[in-house]
Length: 328
Image 1 (cartoon, rainbow, N blue to C red):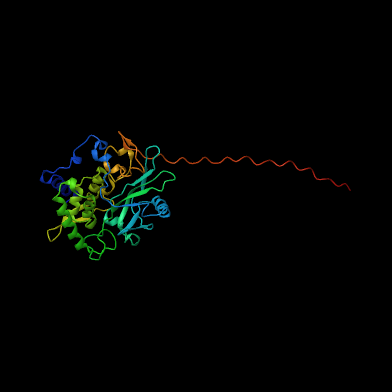
Image 2: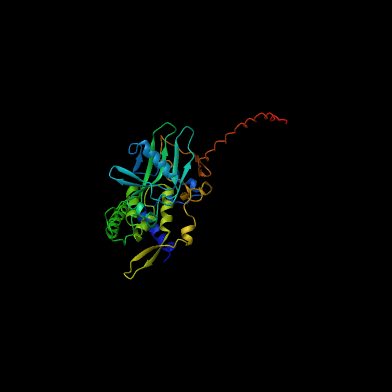
């Protein structure tokens, strides 16, 4: 069974269960017209700020962000940067209003379970999806954290990181199922975003978790909704001998893995919200983005390189006097 048939069926059943349809799913002429494209949809997601990190750690993070999406460990109130954890995606700077700070967002706030593997990422729990810095001279810093997916549900070893730290795959799947059932019984505008994302993070290749995830049963941004649907579309469903559906990640060269990959491209902003910087409206008082009625958002202009210093030509030394000639 291909995801086009399976996922579509689940999306329809979840989005319109009991007649509670999500108004954000209504068709609009442009993604820029989606009402959730211009609000902060970070909800109750955790953040890292200049209260948790001193300036030296913020600087270390900003430097690491130039090399790709950044992972962190959230352990109670402690937040630790994992500079050696390499995750897919890169940050794009968003143009902000005059006098405001600077703002960045990654094109991959949501990841597949296979993309968060490796010894350097084993303890990681969250990805920094978007962050902002105050204008020059201000210590203000804030970053929105999104949970990373745990290992596959068939993994019997306790997870070292993710939001299911210490839990085996079957236990995490059971916890995901219980949470999903709880949230499905609620109106979408009452669902906490953190719990919505945990359903997927705990069981990232679970059939019901993926179906719920793609249904966007939460009052969030359209960028998050489209990213979640893209994640679900990367799987194909097959029936196991136990008659249960098993979700398998499509090969890396499959068309679904390459077509419409999430990119922060202004030119495609009016087509899909997955081309919008996520959480860009969530840093009021630090960095307010510039909206664009036609392109939805604007990228910050590239820094202008300082002109090369023109050196004055070296002075030409005066000609030397001819050497005296000694006559015999």
